Image 1 (tube, rainbow, N blue to C red):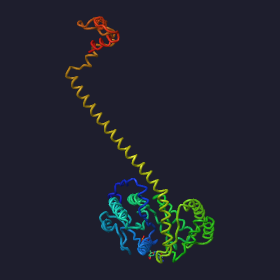
Image 2 (tube, helix red, strand yellow; image 1 turned 90 degrees about the vertical axis):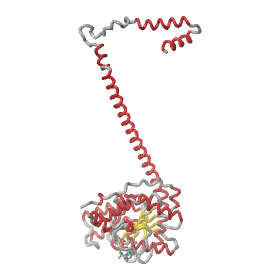
Image 3 (cartoon, rainbow, N blue to C red; image 1 turned 180 degrees about the horizontal axis):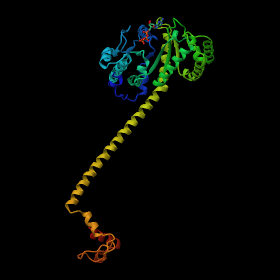
Image 4 (cartoon, rainbow, N blue to C red; image 1 turned 90 degrees about the horizontal axis):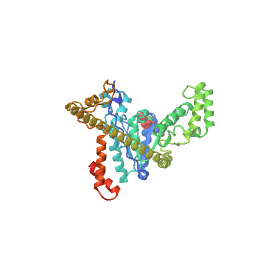
Length: 405
Ligand SMILES: Nc1nc2c(ncn2[C@@H]2O[C@H](COP(=O)(O)OP(=O)(O)OP(=O)(O)O)[C@@H](O)[C@H]2O)c(=O)[nH]1
């Protein structure tokens, strides 16, 4: 079976270094992630209706290729450019592989998508960008293409992740903890400001969750109670599970401090204003904490790429030099062959350890006797000096020029 990774994955586009001042003025992008059935689509529908009523129309982006129908109109839809069923059958993929492959294909168009968003944002006719994502969170958050899409949006717009939680199904300490660990992993992966949205509060109030997140002892008490009985999953939390949850809740205490928490009902619209207030708060956090870090990281990447380019150039130049040297050497050895081998002649003049001369090279008959040549040169200097007037230094310079030249 072909794997999703065999299909083209977008070469990580290099988002332009974000302009901090410009980014701060852009409308916020809200990325809705959450487990299947948590109510992402219904939440987006409610948010869309709410913003339209307030005459602040959002711009909607759907990144879920597998969704059949959406109860609101979408401005950019992954399904318009990629057919999920066709991708599955072409590449012989299962549902998750199909989603990942669609995202991979769509990520190759991310520049166009961000370009469209920027044009609309600059025209000033959108208040927020809402992004719906597949319920299979890992297909989006942990995939290369998901990261490319997120990074590209986040480098152009103040971006906030809204993690939607199905509140009634999170009422037991163990499922609550599992959800929080998942949220923590998303925060760790995206490094974006996050809002935990406890949805379906019309069915189950989210106060218990807020309490567990702020009061460690309250969570411990709930844990103890679950240990003593069977929790609503019928699994219980006794034994090692209890102590594991205990330690995890301690660890997550720090994580909770970085979050905004709101309870909403996508069905009734309750809590939507609180959510929008939390978005404004997180946009401030994006501008103060995330953006400078993003700029720093992208500057670093740019430098790294520049250094790599320079290294590549150096290597290329070195290769060229080697080629040149090789050519020169080739030429020289041909010349040497032509003149009968200069090196061979030199070696024959210095017959090391030979019986006749013990390493002393005998001079040819036509060579002047040793020392005569040097004396001749000195004589010539002296003669020239005597022939010239002027001070000694000038004379000497002239002589040197004459004799050497
Ligand atoms: N009572 C109640 N039900 C809700 C609420 N929000 C969503 N639901 C229901 O939860 C179910 C799942 O909602 P969706 O919006 O499709 O959830 P989703 O997260 O988009 O699902 P996937 O696209 O499959 O990941 C639907 O039956 C909704 O009607 C809510 O606030 N209250």
